[in-house]
Image (cartoon, rainbow, N blue to C red; front, side):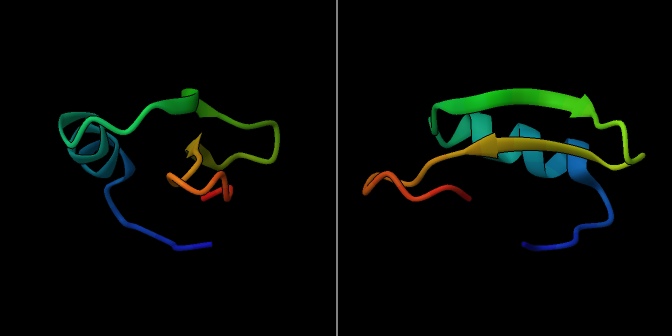
Length: 45
C-alpha cells in the first residue's frame, strides 16, 4: 500500500495512463479515500 497526499491527482494520473480500474475513487467506511486496480499480471494494487 502506498500513502499519497493527493489521491485525486493520483487517480487522474492513473486514468490518463489508461489503466482499467477495479473500483472507482471513493471514501471507505474506515475514513480513507482510495481506488483499486490490477496490474497487467493480475496483481491487486
